[in-house]
Image (cartoon, rainbow, N blue to C red; front, top):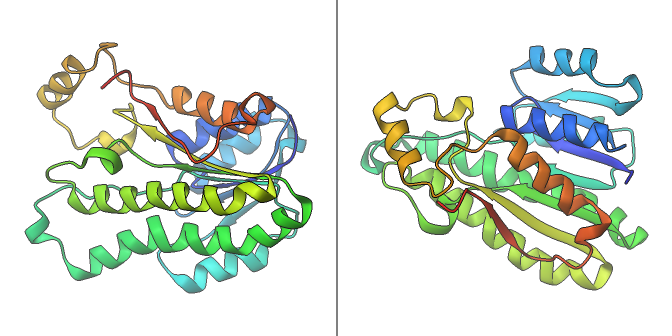
Length: 238
């Protein structure tokens, strides 16, 4: 396997695992991050020098920064992996309009803009893979995470629709839908809440970022050449 992969959200726990897995499989990476520059710097030290083509800082809640990111990329992009995201926990009635706009911009508008920018090149080459990291909440919804569930559901629908449009051009579009993964995003949970969730998971453990990375690696491989428009859960049966 080879090719240049733009990883959006490379500095998060899942993004880091994806980058490490892909680098070890021979991909070359363009790393996007927002605030966690230290994680990207550490990857620079740990991964082979040739594995990272460039790194770009951008707050994707701002359309101007999305456009700036696209203009900054000087390497061809063969594949896209969207691993960025932010949770929003609390009662829906208390969510501000500003927060709604931020969540929609980050999870919906930015991926659409970035994908739209790179699609013409993929169509010209008649190849390319687009993968979004969504969430099981996008499938079934979650109390106290209404906005997060909504934007993840939008991502799932985007994947299903775009896959039908891009299929004739040999461009694969899929999503990985994690369940309860042991990341900083779940750091707000109390031990009792965490234990209750794990008790409901048939495999009786939280998922690891590596579990998600393994599925992304599979979808980028030739072995997944007939997988299209799928929302693949990595949830331990939860």
